[in-house]
Length: 354
Image (cartoon, rainbow, N blue to C red; front, side, top):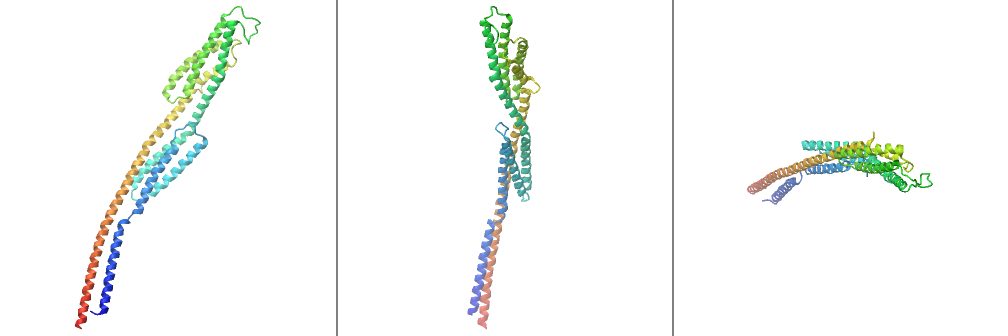
């Protein structure tokens, strides 16, 4: 065989073998590519929705309480708005990636969560105002009763008792003790002591209702208050006309204010009942969000499972296609080598004959 033919044959063989090797390697790499980037984006977006849903709930679904301020409420609203924006972005990014039905269900649950948060946030200012007002009333009641009214009644009782026992008084113009005790003085003392007991019970009932958390107890507490207030009114009527100089002038107006606090048009019981109704509504909304968050997590878990299943299926298909392609390349390469050798042999024999 001529040298030039040998060289040509070897070059052809090398080219065919090299092409086969490159084709084999390229087909083998197909199993690592496919839609990996698309699947990663889906998984990342799904997990981000779960994270931002929980962030939204943490920011907006907190029970209204006295520790909240205008600044903290505004900060909460800023966090709520940020979480909403993030959820909108992530949901938009998931649409059109092959799982739209699942993503639509997730979006429905997210919208339900947003609606709950918006309702809680919308009701919060009125509820917070009521909570603050109830606390201010409680402190005012405690201050006026324990610091002023209570001591004033007790001093009046002590002065009245002292006069009854000694006939002497720091507030009467008496040069010497009274020789006889009139029935009116004893009656004054009796009404003062009864008034003191009624005020103590009424104050306890108002203090209890302002701190109440169960609306079913309000009626019971109010009945106890009304009973004590009724007796206090009877004592006030007598003392208003027959209080005597020993009765501190602050007692009657302060007791009247105390009774009005529990029975007037803007009384504690109605205010607390309205506040408790709002608090219970808020608690019910917050509780309902747990089911919505659970539904979001369930749908996201199902979406992740769907994506992972698609990844495995795609990888299997790619492997099969690659294996089939590699077999074809191998067969074509072998056929090419055989043909080159046959042609070379044929040409070599013709050269020798010539």
